[in-house]
Image (cartoon, rainbow, N blue to C red; front, side, top):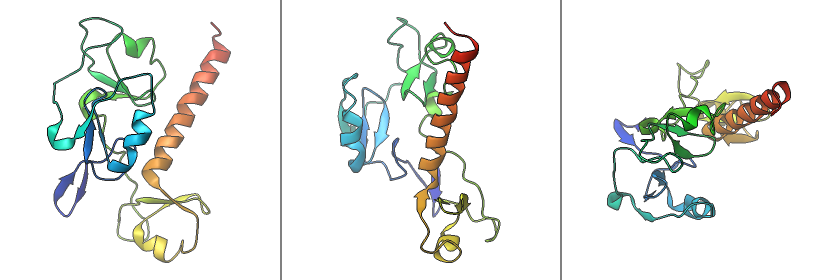
Amino acid sequence: MATSQGQDILRCHLCPDPVEHHCNHCRVNLCSNCILKHITDKSKSHEIVEFMNRIEEPLPYCNSHDKKLCKMYCNDCQEPACEECITTTHKHHEIVEFMKRNETPSLPNCKSHDKAPCKMYCNDCKEPACVQCIKTTHKNHDISDIVVVIKNLRRRIHANAEKLQNILQPQ
């Protein structure tokens, strides 16, 4: 969880905005802007509720292996996974503990500004940047949210690793 002014803030599963809603079926937190993006996945049913009205269950059961609890979560597929699924269906995917699935990646610190967190990424210079750097060194550059950049890079790395695995060990 990210911290702002001493209080914990839950972030949206799809973007860095604060949480306002929750999908009870997928067990993900969402901001208002990302609800439509989330429900466009027609492979699953969705139940969007206000965050305060979410249904909290300790761990979901696996859809593929009856009565197995999903202690893990696949960030690539954005779904819970049991111990058997992580060695088959989600092999070579980014797996995290189920309860830690909504945590944002740790951000790099700025080298120029007393270790301020770099919340942005300068696409022109290909480097992380803090808020102060965005206003000075990277003024008028193409800037992106670093969490989105990190997630996209992870997806590409996992996709490339999977392609390489298929080349080395064709099925």
